[in-house]
Length: 346
DNA sequence: TAGGGCTCGACCTCAAAGTT
DNA sequence: AACTTTGAGGTCGAGCCCTA
Image 1 (tube, rainbow, N blue to C red):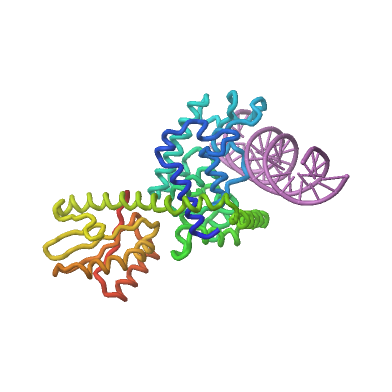
Image 2 (cartoon, rainbow, N blue to C red):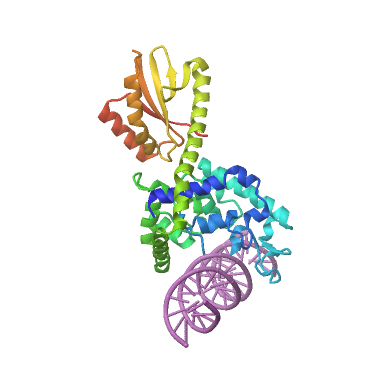
């Protein structure tokens, strides 16, 4: 499974389960026996290769449909067909609405990078952090098993006691992710070191399964969809950032000085003493945005015939972290460019 | 080619350990 | 003490391969 394929699977998930789909979701779209297209099926099984949350029972979803309606587990609340965590309410509908609103919260927090707020959500860790990962724009490392997380946390210098939160460990992992490695590469690396023996086996097994399946018809389908869905998601994000940037610049400099999409330049800003070329990128890390944008922007500013001074600004969604800043300074130094990185949150 | 045996994944139950 | 989390393990059925 290459990074591109993993990324394609993620985008397939995000295309199938957009926020609107979740808002409109009914209980039987969420969990259900025999239905392969439920949200929980996607999170647990279809995207298993993006970080497994197999192991615990279906109660990790907060509510599940029992295969044998008559066998009622005594630890949970039971309806005719469903069982759920008592804390979520007294009947199926109430419980499901509460869980749905929690899931929407998780997605919102995750998209905005407010990972510490996710700790307080009632759903079991395994499931809620997988959901968070899927919507995090690859800004979490997909490792979810408690013990493995604890070993990793310890390795990164955290004191593991009962006060430690999962988000703290995730923040550490993100911090230590080398910027030239994908979250999946880093996940495999960490799992190699900190996953227990049996877990390693499971991953090996999965790898083999994927390899074998790679040649069958079944696997070509998602790959074909991959390309289109990738650009779909990326485009959506790009447009959102571009809109937000335009708003911000218009407010500050006046609408008449902000030009969209002229000669393929995402946003151009006209000022008496300079022209700003803004190139918008949707990647998850500042360094990546810069890498993708620089060539383009240099060319635009070179081709523009205006004699005013030219400023180049690469725009991404997230603030630059320490590694990104190092990269930015390096480029500035080496290339002697009037160049900035700007983040616009959406 | 029917059917026995086997494996594997999916789903589920149980109970111990942990938490509040 | 009551409830939640978690690992271990059981059951079921689909799919595969082998053999009569």
